[in-house]
Picture 1 (cartoon, rainbow over the protein chains, first blue to last red):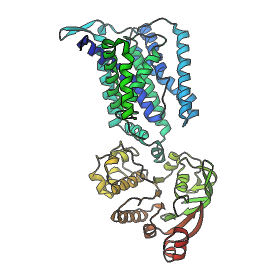
Picture 2 (tube, helix red, strand yellow; picture 1 turned 45 degrees about the vertical axis):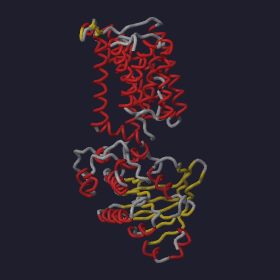
Picture 3 (tube, each protein chain N blue to C red; picture 1 turned 180 degrees about the vertical axis):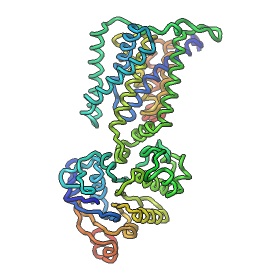
Picture 4 (cartoon, one colour; picture 1 turned 60 degrees about the horizontal axis):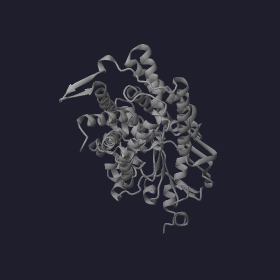
Amino acid sequence: MSGLNAFQLLNGLTFAALLFIVASGFTLIFGLLRIVNLAHGALYLLGGYAAYATASASGSFLAGMLAAMLAVAVMGLVLDQGLLRFVRGHELRQVLLTLGVGLVLNDMMLVVFGGDTYTVPAPEFLRGALRFAGMFYPKYRLFVLVLGIVIFILLWLLLNRTRLGALIRAGVDDPETIEAMGINIRRIFLLTFMLGAALAGLGGAVGGAFLTLYPSADAEILVFSLAVVIIGGRGSLVGAAVGALMVGMLNTVGQVMFPEFAYFVIFGPMAAILAFRPLGLFGRTA
Amino acid sequence: MLEVADIHSFYGEAHVLQGASLTVGKSEVVALLGRNGMGKTTLIRSVMGVSPPNVRSGQVTFKGEAILGLAPHLIAKRGVGYVPQGRRLFPSLTVTEHLTVLKPAAATHGWTVAKAFEFFPRLGERRYHRGNQLSGGERQMLAVARALMIDPELILMDEPSEGLAPVMVQHLEGIIAELKAAGLSILLVEQNLYSALAVADRVYILETGRVVHEASAAAIGADPETLTQFLGVH
């Protein structure tokens, strides 16, 4: 394990936490709506820019996070009701549509924010490093790790302990049947889509403070999110957590130990998992 | 209660229902019989508004109001319960969640979780199990209990006896009789002729998408010629 130390393991863990926040939204949308939302990366970046603009203007990182979630949830509403509504049930058209929306959003953000790199300003108390176990580690990254765990717990409670969560799970299992039982599944779909989009926005706000924001950041996070969801299994929260851990750690290990094969270290195991479990580690047939 | 008039339903270009008509009265159990592929499930799905099939013409009225073309959840809201073919339980929901997902646990009117568990004690014992951890009979009980949670006036049951042991089929017949006694109307699709005749008031026989015979259950039970001709029973 030459070159791999606790510092880098923590880097892997905190990156995994960010990936989880973004990918949990992705897997919610993928699992329930059966949409591979290729605009998810653009939603992440949009959230990042919204957080940057709000946090810079107001001086509040919390306001930036909330603005990112709100702005991207509204974008999700527009995307679902304005466009996706017309191509329901046509998977290929949905994928192409979201890809196009992602490209358009990306270009519009380039027009508004230019090609410069931005960093969402983290609040004062999260700057600097924390000293523990004989090393210094950035406080902000630890905050991301804690936030990832908190989001996991909140989503788990939502999905497993609330009626809305049971409706979402029933919709993932069998949308036709739950609708025939008197549930307006379209409304549940829309709520879920907005929640998934808000999580992408939150990811953008949080990621924008340590990965920085730049015009192609959306494609990078999208590729990682896809890997997380494919490894974890469509629509599975635990799958997204495990997938995020695997991709986060493999990414760090790959960069440290096999820098020339960094992508292979992630996508090689992903291909191997798919060969034996085509639905991912926690995926189920519909 | 329910009137289906001259409906034509298609799967793609396949003309499955070719002008089928039937009625179900208040507190009446009506069985829809016919060989495989004659359109029984298609008719149930057409009434429920589930797509496919596409219903291209005809009328469906429930309590005097046209319901054809409404979304399934609106049809359900008007009081049509649905027990789909193959149960279609939700694998990731517990027994209790199958019920509370349709009506909050705190509800006190009509069918409640407590009342459902009283009616199906076996489900109460298994309340924390998931849909896919139940036996075939328990699954069917749960599918019926789930349909009851919307307080329906009519229940569409698509082959409820399919895959059940004879003792469970008998149990199911008892449940259908109790629901009828409680005032519910039931439209029942059945492969199991004797089970259908045991519970139904009237029977329709469907052949290549049309109703070719209608009779009281008693009359058709005593009519071996018709049974042989349309159902292949000897």
